[in-house]
Length: 88
Figure (cartoon, rainbow, N blue to C red):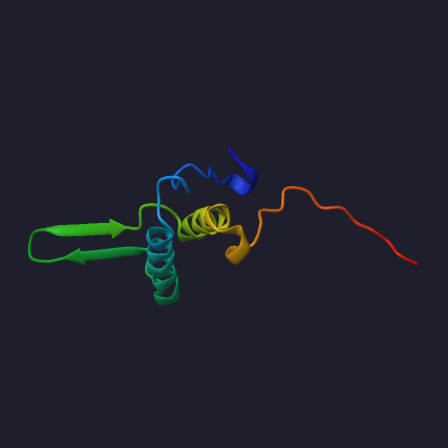
């Protein structure tokens, strides 16, 4: 597993378009805003339970990384290492 428990294997910047990734991100943010990740419905006999395919935090992390790989000038570069410099 990668850092923070996220795998980064669901979205591929060479296959998935920027519009597709933005659409997935927009839908995940809408569910996050609404507070809906698990939905249940039951009637007089049948009942269903629906859940988002992955945790919303994971989807947002995947889309952010994929967008940075697709267009780093627009969405920022992926920082793999940082250094501290002291002046003065």
